[in-house]
Length: 253
Image 1 (cartoon, helix red, strand yellow):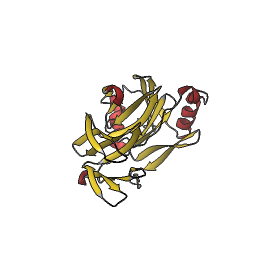
Image 2 (tube, helix red, strand yellow; image 1 turned 90 degrees about the vertical axis):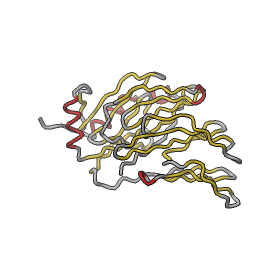
Image 3 (cartoon, helix red, strand yellow; image 1 turned 30 degrees about the vertical axis):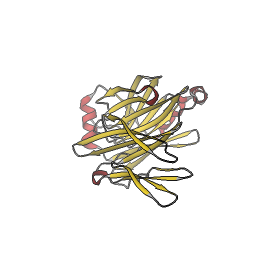
Image 4 (cartoon, one colour; image 1 turned 60 degrees about the horizontal axis):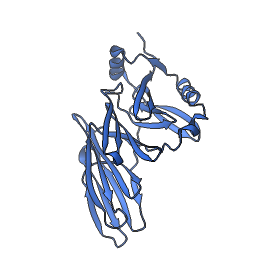
């Protein structure tokens, strides 16, 4: 069973992060993890990583410090269940991989209602609506979707907004007054702006394809993606992809 965890972060003010010497923070974390940059065009070595991986790399943040943690692939990997609370309704999400999942609304009077019958990956509030990401990545299956829940504090109404090219790892960003989602799937990088109803695939068949991304952290204008055998560093320029770099364990030739 393959399940992908969604980690959520808010991009509040890029200049604030620029003061932290973003490049130094990222470079320091990569150096301490003993990862070296690999040519993203070297498909042979990337394919070698897929077949020889024994370690999983996860990204953690503590204040301004970024740490890249290495664990064995067979070590337990805990996933959090999304939960959202209002004064009147509690939203509980279930994600049991290939066995299915659902989003349940529970009112104060104990009334229950299943709103979505899919694996729930994350829940985000933007203004007066909730946005729910669903996904499943298992064997040959790799799918995802985005739902909008309006009137979520009293009488939730669910609308399916769009399908995704795969099961998502999403990062919630806000550029100015426009809420923007950058969505990382098993093999893609996708931009979704609910207000504009814009879905844009920034990269497909990405370098982390088949390397099982497990989570991501936003550091200024960079996204660090943890995966088998290493870390991808994505640099964005507003709503466009600037670069993707791959840092991996040293490979013996």
